Image (tube, rainbow, N blue to C red; front, side):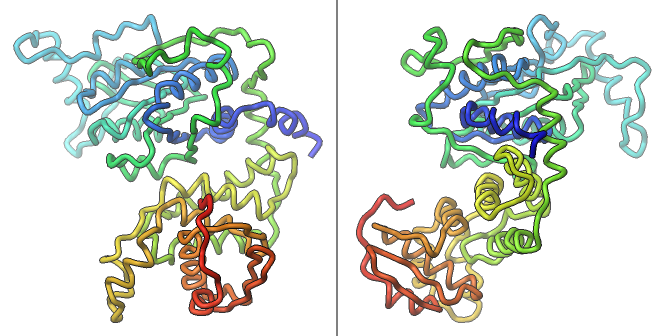
Length: 419
């Protein structure tokens, strides 16, 4: 792939967050970023610096909470220097004739069937390129639906006018992993991929710029900056031409019949797994295929490999999987014991389900945990076609065809790093 040599040379120079944004911007899709509670403010700042220095895009950091209103959300989408007061709804006691007439006119834009009619004068304003929404899962469902509308149609109609998204528009919900507040399922399904950033992954720009570093994890609430057309010395710069080249080259990536079957096997496994209650939609299947091809271009090849497909599966499906509850397991309808099912599903979480996808049965395992053993047995139990599996553990080979054989032949687990 001679045309993609520049992209493959660029990839090793990018950080994990830069790669995630690079792929999503090329695909004109959106990304979910997960992190820990202690790191969420620093990750938001790092993303902001990446937008400015690596991609030359404007951004807005939204510090969301349950108290965030619809008008607050709309106002924070606008770049600095834009008149925002029209997006702040006046209180009922201060509602003037003029503002009341404006709201009334907004409702009059719908015909008797509820469809929007064309307005004689539309006040249009363009939002920033990248929206970094911290703790976006805490806002109410109405705000999440508005974000979905902006992502889907690139327009958002408000009483004050129409908000339009630019061509390179990227919405980044920044969420603390394992929180109990879920994102709207329709919005979650519309997110292209998800990425988890931990402390050990580092911060390329923050570690160089002390002015941005957190002091006691202080919040960078509602910080908005316009792009500075200056490239930081020693850091790569990605322009719109390179983004378009990545997208174009991804359409030329070939896929053999065996790889197509492998992709479909992963999707079927997730849909049939007793540990997965849902989330594997048609949209996610399409994203899975397109993201696999983008990764191939990033690696400098024009064909798909099993390892690239497995990596794409982890990025596309991890945030979509809905883990099943023991009392909802389908085998209970045929006489299975609830306690036995609970034991099987007890240690199954999203990360262990994704481990099955990346697991290589011929890879030697020096140490493994009870959790991994349970996952292996579950994988064999669900995937009936997994026969003659051979595993090397501590230089000893174990061969089995069924889950029952795995339970009896696999040795007692030693406590290892796990998953």
